[in-house]
Amino acid sequence: MATCNPGKQDFFDTMIPLVRPMATRLTVDEDFLLAIVAFEDSWGQDAHNKKLHNIFGLTKAGGNNLAFSSYQACVDYWERNYGAKVKGIQDLEKFIAAMKEIGYNSVNPSYYSTFRDVYRSVRAYKSACKVK
Amino acid sequence: MRLAIALLAGLCLANFANADASPDRQWLRERIAHMTPVKGAYRNSQYGFTVPALPGIHAYRAAAPAPNHGVLYVLGDHRTITVSAEFDAADYGSTKAQLDHILAGMSAGSVDRSAITLDGRPAEQTVFRAGDAVTKVVAQRRDERDGILYELDLTTTPGNQAEDWALFDKVIAGFKSKPLLR
Image (cartoon, rainbow over all chains, first blue to last red; front, side, top):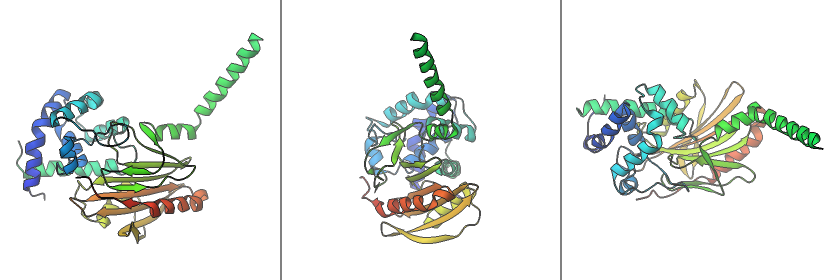
Protein backbone atom coordinates (compact mmCIF):
# COMPACT_ATOMS: atom_id res chain seq x y z
CA MET A 1 0.00 0.00 0.00
CA ALA A 2 1.66 3.22 -1.14
CA THR A 3 1.71 6.16 1.24
CA CYS A 4 2.06 9.66 -0.13
CA ASN A 5 5.13 11.58 1.05
CA PRO A 6 6.39 15.10 0.29
CA GLY A 7 8.75 13.85 -2.42
CA LYS A 8 6.01 12.05 -4.33
CA GLN A 9 3.56 14.92 -3.82
CA ASP A 10 6.16 17.34 -5.21
CA PHE A 11 6.73 15.01 -8.16
CA PHE A 12 3.06 15.07 -9.15
CA ASP A 13 2.67 18.79 -8.42
CA THR A 14 5.64 19.59 -10.67
CA MET A 15 5.31 17.02 -13.44
CA ILE A 16 1.59 16.78 -14.10
CA PRO A 17 1.24 20.37 -15.36
CA LEU A 18 4.10 19.59 -17.77
CA VAL A 19 3.11 16.12 -18.89
CA ARG A 20 -0.69 16.31 -18.96
CA PRO A 21 -0.99 18.78 -21.88
CA MET A 22 1.36 16.61 -23.96
CA ALA A 23 -0.58 13.48 -23.01
CA THR A 24 -3.80 15.19 -24.06
CA ARG A 25 -2.32 16.28 -27.37
CA LEU A 26 -1.05 12.76 -28.03
CA THR A 27 -4.14 11.05 -26.60
CA VAL A 28 -1.85 8.82 -24.59
CA ASP A 29 -2.26 7.70 -20.96
CA GLU A 30 -0.39 10.37 -18.96
CA ASP A 31 0.74 7.76 -16.44
CA PHE A 32 2.98 6.19 -19.10
CA LEU A 33 4.77 9.52 -19.48
CA LEU A 34 4.91 10.05 -15.72
CA ALA A 35 6.41 6.57 -15.38
CA ILE A 36 9.20 7.48 -17.82
CA VAL A 37 9.91 10.63 -15.82
CA ALA A 38 9.86 8.74 -12.51
CA PHE A 39 12.21 6.12 -13.94
CA GLU A 40 14.62 8.42 -15.74
CA ASP A 41 14.63 11.22 -13.19
CA SER A 42 14.30 9.22 -9.96
CA TRP A 43 10.88 10.70 -9.20
CA GLY A 44 12.18 14.20 -9.95
CA GLN A 45 14.88 13.82 -7.30
CA ASP A 46 18.00 13.59 -9.46
CA ALA A 47 19.98 16.73 -8.73
CA HIS A 48 21.96 16.62 -11.96
CA ASN A 49 18.91 16.21 -14.20
CA LYS A 50 17.19 18.97 -12.28
CA LYS A 51 20.05 21.29 -13.14
CA LEU A 52 19.72 20.27 -16.80
CA HIS A 53 15.89 20.44 -16.78
CA ASN A 54 16.10 16.96 -18.28
CA ILE A 55 13.23 14.88 -16.92
CA PHE A 56 13.25 12.18 -19.62
CA GLY A 57 16.94 11.24 -19.42
CA LEU A 58 17.52 12.41 -23.00
CA THR A 59 21.05 12.42 -24.32
CA LYS A 60 23.18 14.15 -26.89
CA ALA A 61 25.62 12.36 -29.17
CA GLY A 62 28.46 11.25 -26.95
CA GLY A 63 26.10 9.93 -24.34
CA ASN A 64 25.84 12.70 -21.80
CA ASN A 65 22.48 14.11 -20.82
CA LEU A 66 21.13 17.07 -22.75
CA ALA A 67 20.65 20.42 -21.06
CA PHE A 68 17.39 22.31 -21.64
CA SER A 69 16.49 25.90 -20.83
CA SER A 70 13.35 24.74 -19.01
CA TYR A 71 11.31 21.64 -18.22
CA GLN A 72 8.88 22.71 -20.91
CA ALA A 73 11.68 22.75 -23.49
CA CYS A 74 12.50 19.17 -22.50
CA VAL A 75 8.86 18.09 -22.84
CA ASP A 76 8.64 19.78 -26.26
CA TYR A 77 11.82 18.03 -27.40
CA TRP A 78 10.49 14.63 -26.27
CA GLU A 79 7.22 15.22 -28.09
CA ARG A 80 9.01 16.23 -31.29
CA ASN A 81 11.21 13.12 -31.22
CA TYR A 82 8.84 10.47 -29.91
CA GLY A 83 5.30 11.85 -29.88
CA ALA A 84 4.27 10.40 -33.24
CA LYS A 85 5.47 6.94 -32.17
CA VAL A 86 3.24 6.77 -29.08
CA LYS A 87 0.26 8.77 -30.31
CA GLY A 88 -3.10 7.30 -29.33
CA ILE A 89 -1.69 4.51 -27.14
CA GLN A 90 -3.71 3.74 -24.01
CA ASP A 91 -2.56 0.17 -23.42
CA LEU A 92 0.58 -0.43 -21.33
CA GLU A 93 1.90 -3.32 -23.40
CA LYS A 94 1.41 -1.37 -26.62
CA PHE A 95 3.24 1.57 -25.07
CA ILE A 96 6.13 -0.71 -24.09
CA ALA A 97 6.19 -2.13 -27.61
CA ALA A 98 6.46 1.43 -28.94
CA MET A 99 9.32 2.19 -26.55
CA LYS A 100 11.12 -0.91 -27.77
CA GLU A 101 10.54 0.15 -31.35
CA ILE A 102 11.96 3.56 -30.57
CA GLY A 103 14.94 1.97 -28.82
CA TYR A 104 14.39 3.94 -25.61
CA ASN A 105 16.57 1.42 -23.81
CA SER A 106 18.15 -1.01 -26.22
CA VAL A 107 20.77 -2.30 -23.78
CA ASN A 108 19.09 -3.67 -20.68
CA PRO A 109 16.71 -6.61 -21.20
CA SER A 110 15.12 -5.98 -17.78
CA TYR A 111 14.30 -2.31 -18.42
CA TYR A 112 10.78 -2.84 -19.67
CA SER A 113 9.70 -5.24 -16.93
CA THR A 114 11.00 -2.68 -14.41
CA PHE A 115 9.08 -0.01 -16.33
CA ARG A 116 5.88 -1.98 -15.65
CA ASP A 117 6.63 -1.84 -11.93
CA VAL A 118 7.40 1.88 -12.08
CA TYR A 119 4.12 2.45 -13.90
CA ARG A 120 2.26 0.55 -11.16
CA SER A 121 4.07 2.67 -8.56
CA VAL A 122 3.02 5.86 -10.35
CA ARG A 123 -0.60 4.71 -10.28
CA ALA A 124 -0.39 3.73 -6.62
CA TYR A 125 1.27 6.96 -5.49
CA LYS A 126 -1.04 9.04 -7.65
CA SER A 127 -3.96 7.52 -5.85
CA ALA A 128 -2.29 7.87 -2.42
CA CYS A 129 -1.42 11.51 -3.09
CA LYS A 130 -5.00 12.16 -4.21
CA VAL A 131 -3.85 13.68 -7.49
CA LYS A 132 -6.62 14.87 -9.78
CA MET B 1 31.89 -7.92 -71.75
CA ARG B 2 28.86 -5.94 -70.59
CA LEU B 3 26.96 -9.18 -70.17
CA ALA B 4 29.79 -10.63 -68.06
CA ILE B 5 29.86 -7.55 -65.82
CA ALA B 6 26.10 -7.64 -65.46
CA LEU B 7 26.19 -11.35 -64.56
CA LEU B 8 28.98 -10.78 -62.04
CA ALA B 9 27.13 -7.86 -60.46
CA GLY B 10 23.95 -9.94 -60.27
CA LEU B 11 25.83 -12.79 -58.63
CA CYS B 12 27.38 -10.47 -56.04
CA LEU B 13 24.00 -8.92 -55.28
CA ALA B 14 22.41 -12.34 -54.90
CA ASN B 15 25.15 -13.46 -52.51
CA PHE B 16 24.82 -10.26 -50.48
CA ALA B 17 21.06 -10.66 -50.33
CA ASN B 18 21.41 -14.25 -49.17
CA ALA B 19 23.94 -13.31 -46.54
CA ASP B 20 21.78 -10.41 -45.44
CA ALA B 21 18.80 -12.72 -44.97
CA SER B 22 20.67 -15.18 -42.75
CA PRO B 23 19.20 -15.44 -39.26
CA ASP B 24 22.41 -14.39 -37.52
CA ARG B 25 22.86 -11.21 -39.50
CA GLN B 26 19.18 -10.48 -38.95
CA TRP B 27 19.67 -11.04 -35.22
CA LEU B 28 22.61 -8.63 -35.11
CA ARG B 29 20.80 -6.00 -37.15
CA GLU B 30 17.84 -6.11 -34.78
CA ARG B 31 19.99 -6.23 -31.65
CA ILE B 32 21.98 -3.12 -32.49
CA ALA B 33 19.19 -1.15 -34.16
CA HIS B 34 19.03 2.32 -32.56
CA MET B 35 22.50 1.86 -31.12
CA THR B 36 25.81 3.52 -31.76
CA PRO B 37 29.33 2.06 -31.46
CA VAL B 38 31.40 2.69 -28.36
CA LYS B 39 35.14 3.16 -28.82
CA GLY B 40 37.38 2.34 -25.89
CA ALA B 41 36.21 2.05 -22.29
CA TYR B 42 32.57 2.85 -21.60
CA ARG B 43 31.93 5.63 -19.09
CA ASN B 44 28.52 6.54 -17.73
CA SER B 45 28.57 9.73 -15.71
CA GLN B 46 24.81 9.78 -15.10
CA TYR B 47 24.81 6.49 -13.20
CA GLY B 48 28.43 6.62 -12.04
CA PHE B 49 30.28 3.66 -13.49
CA THR B 50 32.85 2.61 -16.05
CA VAL B 51 33.66 -0.71 -17.71
CA PRO B 52 36.67 -1.54 -19.87
CA ALA B 53 36.87 -2.16 -23.59
CA LEU B 54 37.28 -5.81 -24.56
CA PRO B 55 39.94 -6.13 -27.27
CA GLY B 56 38.44 -7.31 -30.54
CA ILE B 57 34.86 -7.09 -29.25
CA HIS B 58 32.39 -4.53 -30.63
CA ALA B 59 30.48 -2.50 -28.07
CA TYR B 60 27.39 -0.32 -28.46
CA ARG B 61 25.21 2.05 -26.48
CA ALA B 62 21.82 3.59 -27.22
CA ALA B 63 21.90 6.27 -29.89
CA ALA B 64 20.96 9.83 -28.87
CA PRO B 65 18.55 11.19 -27.88
CA ALA B 66 17.52 7.97 -26.10
CA PRO B 67 18.70 7.69 -22.49
CA ASN B 68 22.16 6.26 -21.95
CA HIS B 69 21.80 3.41 -19.46
CA GLY B 70 24.69 1.17 -20.39
CA VAL B 71 26.67 -0.79 -22.91
CA LEU B 72 26.21 -3.91 -25.01
CA TYR B 73 29.16 -6.09 -26.03
CA VAL B 74 28.51 -8.42 -28.96
CA LEU B 75 30.59 -11.56 -28.44
CA GLY B 76 29.11 -13.53 -31.31
CA ASP B 77 25.79 -14.74 -32.66
CA HIS B 78 23.28 -14.61 -29.83
CA ARG B 79 26.14 -14.08 -27.37
CA THR B 80 26.23 -10.78 -25.52
CA ILE B 81 27.28 -9.01 -22.37
CA THR B 82 25.25 -6.03 -21.16
CA VAL B 83 26.15 -3.66 -18.35
CA SER B 84 23.48 -1.17 -17.38
CA ALA B 85 22.17 1.01 -14.61
CA GLU B 86 18.87 2.58 -13.62
CA PHE B 87 17.41 4.53 -10.75
CA ASP B 88 15.54 2.34 -8.29
CA ALA B 89 12.26 4.03 -9.17
CA ALA B 90 10.26 0.88 -8.48
CA ASP B 91 11.56 0.86 -4.89
CA TYR B 92 13.05 -2.64 -4.90
CA GLY B 93 15.18 -1.44 -2.01
CA SER B 94 17.81 -4.21 -1.99
CA THR B 95 20.07 -6.22 -4.26
CA LYS B 96 18.09 -9.34 -3.39
CA ALA B 97 14.77 -7.80 -4.42
CA GLN B 98 16.40 -6.41 -7.57
CA LEU B 99 17.65 -9.85 -8.58
CA ASP B 100 14.27 -11.41 -7.72
CA HIS B 101 12.70 -9.00 -10.18
CA ILE B 102 15.29 -9.64 -12.91
CA LEU B 103 14.91 -13.39 -12.62
CA ALA B 104 11.11 -13.18 -12.66
CA GLY B 105 11.34 -11.17 -15.88
CA MET B 106 13.57 -13.85 -17.40
CA SER B 107 11.22 -16.65 -16.25
CA ALA B 108 14.26 -18.20 -14.61
CA GLY B 109 12.32 -20.06 -11.93
CA SER B 110 14.21 -21.25 -8.89
CA VAL B 111 17.98 -20.89 -9.39
CA ASP B 112 21.02 -20.92 -7.15
CA ARG B 113 22.41 -17.54 -6.19
CA SER B 114 25.66 -16.57 -4.60
CA ALA B 115 27.41 -13.55 -3.17
CA ILE B 116 30.01 -11.69 -5.19
CA THR B 117 31.68 -8.30 -4.96
CA LEU B 118 31.44 -5.66 -7.63
CA ASP B 119 34.08 -2.98 -7.23
CA GLY B 120 34.49 -4.06 -3.62
CA ARG B 121 30.79 -3.77 -2.75
CA PRO B 122 28.38 -6.66 -2.11
CA ALA B 123 26.45 -7.98 -5.09
CA GLU B 124 24.62 -11.17 -6.04
CA GLN B 125 25.07 -13.44 -9.03
CA THR B 126 23.28 -16.37 -10.58
CA VAL B 127 23.67 -18.69 -13.55
CA PHE B 128 20.90 -20.59 -15.28
CA ARG B 129 20.14 -22.33 -18.51
CA ALA B 130 17.04 -21.70 -20.58
CA GLY B 131 16.75 -23.62 -23.83
CA ASP B 132 19.98 -23.19 -25.78
CA ALA B 133 21.10 -20.15 -23.81
CA VAL B 134 23.23 -19.96 -20.69
CA THR B 135 22.66 -16.75 -18.74
CA LYS B 136 24.72 -15.28 -15.97
CA VAL B 137 23.45 -12.23 -14.08
CA VAL B 138 25.17 -10.00 -11.55
CA ALA B 139 23.07 -7.46 -9.66
CA GLN B 140 23.95 -4.73 -7.23
CA ARG B 141 21.89 -1.97 -5.66
CA ARG B 142 24.01 1.06 -4.86
CA ASP B 143 22.51 2.55 -1.73
CA GLU B 144 23.10 6.15 -2.59
CA ARG B 145 20.48 8.84 -3.07
CA ASP B 146 17.28 6.86 -3.75
CA GLY B 147 19.20 3.86 -5.06
CA ILE B 148 20.90 2.90 -8.31
CA LEU B 149 20.57 -0.60 -9.76
CA TYR B 150 23.52 -2.07 -11.62
CA GLU B 151 22.90 -5.14 -13.76
CA LEU B 152 25.49 -7.16 -15.68
CA ASP B 153 24.21 -9.94 -17.94
CA LEU B 154 26.01 -12.56 -19.97
CA THR B 155 24.07 -14.57 -22.52
CA THR B 156 25.98 -17.34 -24.25
CA THR B 157 25.75 -20.90 -25.51
CA PRO B 158 27.03 -24.05 -23.81
CA GLY B 159 29.69 -24.37 -26.50
CA ASN B 160 31.04 -20.86 -25.90
CA GLN B 161 30.51 -20.80 -22.17
CA ALA B 162 34.14 -21.07 -21.07
CA GLU B 163 35.52 -18.31 -23.30
CA ASP B 164 32.56 -15.99 -22.71
CA TRP B 165 32.70 -16.44 -18.93
CA ALA B 166 36.32 -15.36 -19.07
CA LEU B 167 35.28 -12.18 -20.90
CA PHE B 168 32.44 -11.59 -18.44
CA ASP B 169 34.89 -11.97 -15.57
CA LYS B 170 37.05 -9.28 -17.18
CA VAL B 171 34.08 -6.94 -17.33
CA ILE B 172 33.17 -7.66 -13.71
CA ALA B 173 36.77 -7.11 -12.60
CA GLY B 174 36.96 -3.89 -14.60
CA PHE B 175 33.65 -2.45 -13.36
CA LYS B 176 34.33 0.69 -11.33
CA SER B 177 31.73 2.86 -9.69
CA LYS B 178 32.30 6.60 -9.80
CA PRO B 179 30.95 9.53 -7.82
CA LEU B 180 27.48 10.57 -8.95
CA LEU B 181 27.01 13.89 -10.72
CA ARG B 182 25.69 16.78 -8.66
